Amino acid sequence: MVTIKTKKIKDQIYYYLEHSIRKGKQVKKKEIYIGKKIPQNIEQLKRNLLDDIYKERWYADVDRIKQRFSKEHRTMPKSAREKQLQNFAISFTYDTQRIEGSTLTLRETADLLENGITPKNRPIRDVKEAEAHRDLFYEILDLKKDLSLQMVLEWHWKLFNLTKPDIAGKIRKHQVTISGSRFMSPSPVEVYPLVTEFFKWYNKNKGKIHPVELAAIAHLKFVTVHPLADGNGRISRLIMNFILHKKGYPMLDIKYEGRNSYYNALEKSHLKKEDRTFLQWLVKRYIKEYRRYLQ
Image (tube, rainbow, N blue to C red; front, side):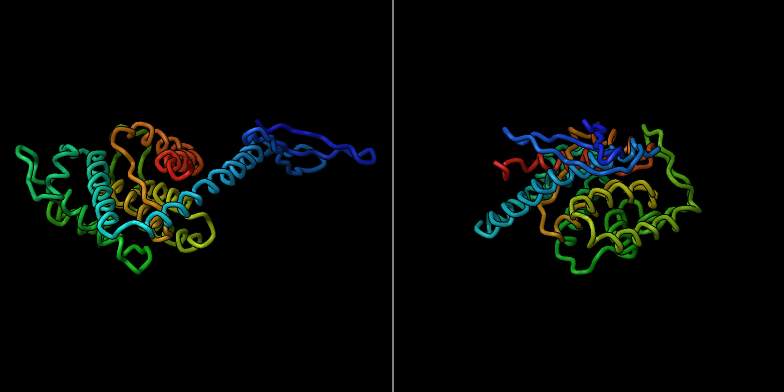
């Protein structure tokens, strides 16, 4: 809890914000000076202090995860690395597709992508999009170029050209709604300026903020703009993992089974028009996923 503290120096009162952090048996205090009187935006200052504290703690963990993950990969046999990546590609494809309504089970996805066995009595669209996502995922891992609008539209075309050729690789020109959400996506006339602004934001911040924060906020911002007629979530999650992989961090599979907390974090950030709720959710989820590297 952030508290307001005062110090009196030569009859003058000075105000500070203070927060105590317990780490093991030690208690550390973080303090910032806020002025000779309590500012009107005191609640925002409290939130900013908490954000800074949590980022400092979380990002130390995240960087340890990266370090130990990289060390493990350097010593792992090539065949084991390839198998690990294949397993991730299958799980990631299953979860990202299932979140968006695919009917394929995890076992069916694995049989399809590992052995070429097409599941019976499943929509051919689900099969084609799973195969396209797997292929695109592997392609993204080898890309040397950085994110751009042209690149993302190419990704979208590769995902949907066999199943939805009328929208594949195109910025939407009609209004779309998000099922089960109170958030209203931007109108068609707003989309191109907003998606252009997104890439300006990315290029400005890609070397300034922590890579996991960059990946999380890029995911949030892109899906908030919702520039595509369909597949915005899938593209956003690919953008997230493209950034993580490019920066040397293990990638994240947002699980279908945990979709409700994922939806809620997105919804809260959308409605409040802020990044912190989704950022905190994703960083916590990331650390939980890779906790084994911190033990």
